[in-house]
Length: 149
Image 1: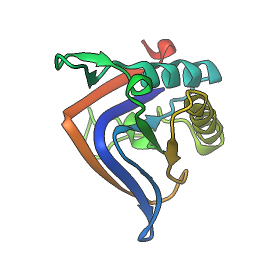
Image 2: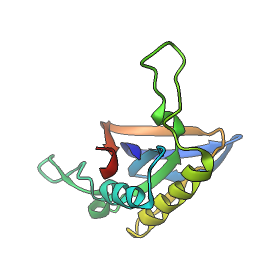
Image 3: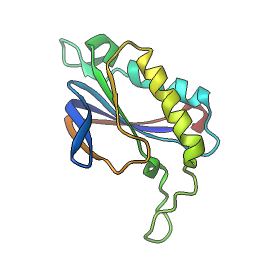
Image 4: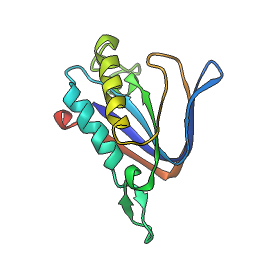
């Protein structure tokens, strides 16, 4: 499982011009599910995201997590995170899990995020979405689940 985590001042996701999810200060998490991923990967990565220390403390150091600052989370499924463009010009998505595998794992990931007690907004799995991200810093971190390392 792969996540692109962006620290944001605010973010939203729209489908057909209608906002379906929005957050204030917090994290946008773009999540890709790979063939062979499991519920353990979802749990590991959700825990890693909510505890990732990428918010500044009083000294300006990355010492605080989303939990510690009361951040909000916007989780968006994104199979293109497993796009492989090393050969040719058109990416291959052969490593991305099919919807019947990836959607339940995405839902489990959201469940684990919600267990943190933070506000969690989501997009719609498989929908064409417009994501508006106000990247703060900018700070962007790439995470892999423990089984992908």
